[in-house]
Image (cartoon, rainbow, N blue to C red; front, side, top):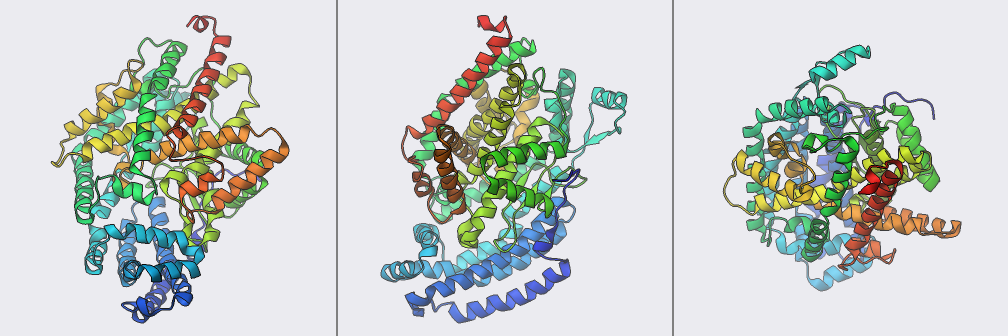
Length: 605
C-alpha cells in the first residue's frame, strides 16, 4: 500500500452531487406513493406466496430513505455547520417514511396463520418478521405513529443535533506548558484545540499538562452546564413519555427488546461486572507505584507509563492494523485495504468536524464510511482497528439486505473489539518484556473503559431515568461521581472538576442505555478470542476463522443467541459472563508478572 498521509471520504457511492440527491428524492417519493396506493389497507389481500415481493419493494424504499440520510449525516459529521442541510433532508425523508409506516403495522395485524404462511414463503426475512410480531405489543395506532414520526425532527432529535453542534464548535485553550513544548519542538503553534485534541492531552506524559487540560476542559464545559443538563433532561422526558405510551416496563426495556436481550441477562451482566470492580482498583494501585505518584487523580487515569510515550504517523498505524488483519484473514485485510483506496475513510481532525470515531454502515448498495480523528497516539491506532472491525462487519453483512444487515447493539461491538485484540496480539510479538508493560497497561485501560466504565454509565442512566422530576446539574454531578467512585474505590481520587464530565458523553443523548452493549460485546469478544487462541492446529484455526466470518456475514438475520450458539456459547447462562471476566483477570496477572520481573521494588507487592 502506498503511503497515506490523510484519508478523506468519497461520497459518490451514495450520490455524485447534491443535485443528483434532489432528483432521487423526487423519483423516490413517486415510487413510495405508488407503493402506498397499491398496498395501504390491502395487505390482507396479498397472497402469502407473493408477499416476499412486497417485502422486497418495501426494503428498497426504506434503503432509499437511508441512502439520503446517510449522505446528509456524513456531510454534517464532516462539517457540523451544515445543520440546515441535514434538517432539510431529515424533514423530507420523514415525509416519505410516513407513507410506508402502515406496512409493518398492518403486517402485525394480520391473522397469525397468515403471518406464519408469509414467513414460510419468505424465509430470508423470517427473523425480521418475527421481531415485528414480538414488538407489536408496543406499537401504537397508525395515526399515532404518524404523529410521532412527523414530530420527531423537532422533538428529541432536534436536541440531539443541538448537542452535536454545540460540542463540535467548542474550542479549548491549549495548556501553556503544552504550547511551550510545541514551540521548542518547532511544531506549529496551536492556541485553540477541539474536544478531541484537548482530551488527547489526558494521555500526555507530563502531569502538569494533564492537570491543566482537565481544568481547561472542565471550565469550558461548566459554561455549557445549563444547556447540556437541559438537553439530557429532555431526553429523559422523551424516554419517559415513550415508556408510558408504549407500555414498556422500564425506561431501558425498549433497548433490550431492540437488542434481543432479556432483562434477566442484562441484570446479570451488570451484576457480574460490578462485582469485579476490584480488578480496576488492583490495576491502578500498581500504576500509581509505576508512576511514582502517591495519590492518582482522575487526570492520571491515562497517564502513559515509561516507554509508551511515542507518536505514530497515520500511515505507520495503518500498516500495523493491516498486518494484524492479514495474519488473521486475507479477506479482512483486503476489505480494509480497499476502504483506504476507495475513499471510505475520513481520518484527521478538521475545523467543525464531529469529534470521536464511528463506522456508518450506510446501505447495501454502497459501502460503510469510517470517521476518525487521528492524533498519532497509540490509542488512535487501536481506534483504527476498532472502527475498521465495524466496517468489515458491515461490509460482510450487507449481503443480507437492508432489513437484515444491522446487528443489535449486543453483537454490534463484536467485530470492532475483536479487531483490537488482533492488533494487540500482533504488537505483543514485536516488543521486549519491558516494552510490553505499557502495551498491556494501555490494553487493560481500554478494556476497563469498554467493560467496567460502560457499566458505570449504565448505573448512572438507571438512576437518572428512575427519577420523574427534572434534575439540576448538581444532581447529575452527585450521581456521576458516586457511580465512578464505586469503580475506582480507593485506588484513584476523583477531583471536583470531574463531577461534571457526564455532560459531554454523546450516548446519553443519542442512544440511551446503549452503554451496556459495549460491556456485553467486550465479554463476548474476550470469550471468542480466547476460543480462537485455544485452537492449536492450523486446520482448527482456519475452521474458527470461517465460522467467525460467517457469523459476521449473517448480520442481523438471526438472533444473537442463535448466532453465538455456533461457537457453543450460551448467552443466557449466568456462567457466560464469567468467561470474559476470567480473560481480563488472566491479562491483569500477565501484566503483574511483567511488572514484577522488571521492577524489583514492585516485586515485593
